Image (cartoon, rainbow, N blue to C red):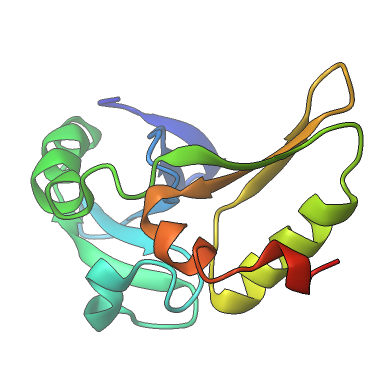
Length: 145
């Protein structure tokens, strides 16, 4: 993880991480990189007080790519733990009718970063972040049918 994995422009990088939070690093003209969380407003409450616009949360500046892993572990991972890890929430056999309604209801409650996928049998699973389990508990399936 110590190198940036996706280079979008000559000065715009996305480090490879697996915590379901998008990080972006912009190279500075005066050397180093400014590190941001690139997520929708209110999607990462642990860092909202550092938000600079509707998509960027400023985290700090590092001197080189090699410093990113240490910075990430000390400044970000330490604060979020495993709260953004995706876990299975709801499985629907042979259809996605209810999954679609649940997905929309979760989205309306403020759940971001969800995933809906199917297997080869046509069964669908909604995955949500651990931190959104409390939102998900408020959904009553019978109200969605």
